[in-house]
Image (tube, rainbow, N blue to C red):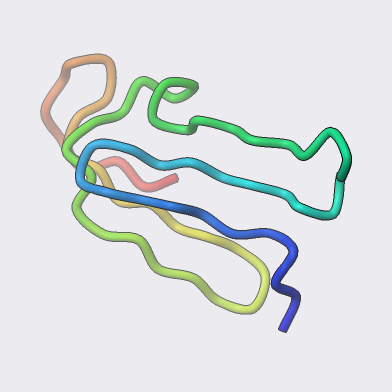
Amino acid sequence: MDQTKFIVTSAKDVLFVDMESMPNKVEIDYDDKESISSIQNIITDDRYFYVLANKKDGKLGYYLL
């Protein structure tokens, strides 16, 4: 229901934005912050975003954030 927080994603990028913190809106580039790549899926529930990636720190695997 709350649409003040959202993520913008692609296979290479995950950007979290909090519009509620205006005028200095918070933007977090999670793929850079967490050193992840090869993003496979993004799902959400009422409270959280979940990101599934295949690489972290250049190592192949399954990583859920």
